[in-house]
Length: 425
Image (cartoon, rainbow, N blue to C red; front, side, top):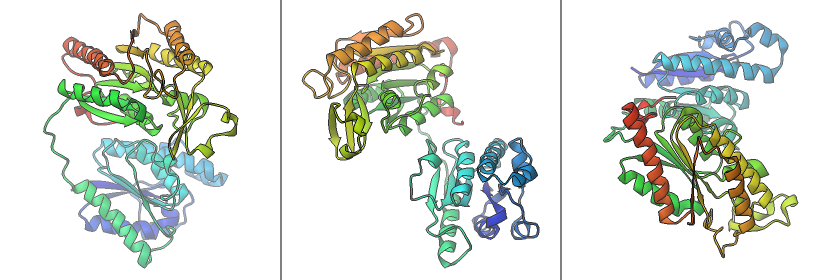
């Protein structure tokens, strides 16, 4: 019988959690109830649903005293501390085999606590939160995890004819995910990650086909911020045998203030983990914004290109490209595993080649010069090809290099580091 975790603030939502707990038990699951409530009310919460792991224990896992936390009456600090403690508790339960899935209910506070805790669980472990915040901007809660947010429709305040149906559905959804047999694996090929954007799709598509013929399984991520963060997380967690990082455009959004930044950790995890990586400068000619009328006024005189009604691209300047080249090379210099940087000298995106709307020889040369002057050639191989990034020959050259890196590692160690079979986080 599988065991799931029910995490929540029993001080305010004991009746709702009791209802959901009953549904999970009826579905044939064992349930560990974890209380992350801050203000305890004697003879209320415990009478409705007793916690297997108390709020005192959750606070202690965060290194704080619950009584002191409650006395301070600082809700923000309390939510932060209980989220940290809940994350530690759930990680321990999962390691012990007592967390095959997790469910929580709440408003923004309860959702924040549960989301932080659930994101620490490995990808693939079912995670469901019934939340009042599920229909808004959920990036802060979901981030790069596989967390499922279930709209509560009403506030999570009492069990009525509508909320009962929604809570029961959420419990059934978790039970279904937990009890469904894991997909059988017909093969166990080394797992790679590749980075793609619309303007580098021909390159990555060709590379993926070649890598699959070489016996690899390829995960392709769209570089919209969350794509880059997910790639970094998988590299750090040991899932990947290698990375084909064709498209590093998120660095431009990080630098200039576009909407697709992946943050300052982009292009660092594979290097720290020693994962073989072959990198290029795909789509560093652009910064991304939403519809044209959302582009900040300070960029009104810049070269803009309407990619589609929802996405407007802005050409990076020579000064920005020089900084991007420096940042990219600096991050690659820190690599502890094999790494190579490929420069496509005839265009870094589908619209940056000669005659394209973003063709800018001075900006491209500033990018290349910064890479050349910053890259530590004793640690990172530099390959310059007189090709467009989307030329099939460019894709093939990157594939050959990544395959050589991985094959050399296999020959030297007898195993593929980061084999997908490692699973976990």
